[in-house]
Amino acid sequence: MATRTWTPPAPYDMGRTLGVLARGPGDPAYRVDPDGSVWRASRTPQGPGTLHLTSERGRVHAEAWGPGAEWLLETLPALLGAADDPDAFTPRHRLVHEAHRRHQGLRLTRTGLVLESLIPSVLEQKVTADEAYRAWRLLLHQHGEPAPGPAPRMRVMPGAQAWAMIPSWDWHKAGVDGKRAATIVRAARAAARLEEAAAMDDARASRRLQAVPGIGPWTAAETLQRSNGSPDAVTVGDLHLPKVIGYALTGAGGTDDEAMLELLTPYEGQRHRACRLILLTSVRPPRRAPRFAVNDMRAL
Image 1 (cartoon, helix red, strand yellow):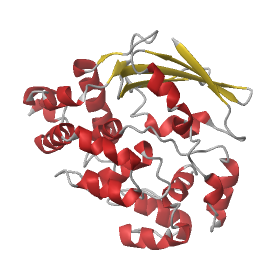
Image 2 (tube, rainbow, N blue to C red):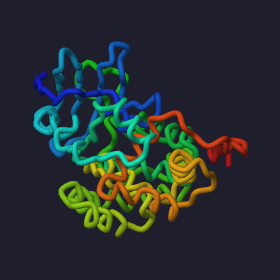
Image 3 (cartoon, helix red, strand yellow):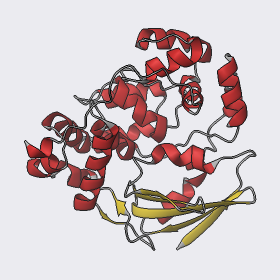
Image 4 (cartoon, rainbow, N blue to C red):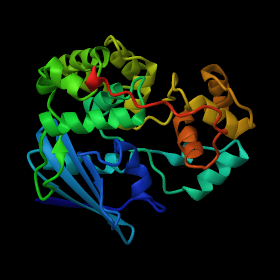
């Protein structure tokens, strides 16, 4: 075990900062204990590693295990939001101002790991969250490996070669259709080039990701928000986000991507942060249609 302690600028909210990395309540690679401490299993450039984070008295204490422990501790400040600049954000709406005041401890995490955020984002394409989370759990349990250290039920996601070698029947058992599976396989085969996007600006990084067939603006933005800590990567093409943003800022329903981007124009450079803050409020448009049914393609 290796350790490191980092003191974030006050105020600081570790749970809100890292919470976007969890892929559902049963994520095998991410766990939150009752005391608020966070466990995270990752495949780093040096190999698998497990990170345990506790926040106490204004400091974050980290313990790490496995071949990737040194890398996880070296990049710890970025993961916890040290590279983020919340002072660059100026609220332009009353609701956003209130959310910003209530969540001053929010920082944007930067993992530096592209494939780790890209693959679950591909799994979330065009399906319900429950379907995507189930697929992620099943694939990690079957094709991942046990997380190093004292985390017996946690799993490290497969490496790029292992993702590319998953047989078609295992994708099917996990409820992943051929299109999403093929996209992940293509991304895994181009993993080295895609990981370079972690050091690029948003525009270049997005173009690099979208060079892989099956990866569009939605998936690229969802990835860069986590891997690069991008404060401006807006998720376009989402079924719900434009309606939530439009209703929160104007009270009107039926907002589309174009109207959402226009509403977010005052936050240019910080549009993702504005969306995060709005989503932390309880303001949602009234539901006028039933929820989408969860499709279980494993029975086909």
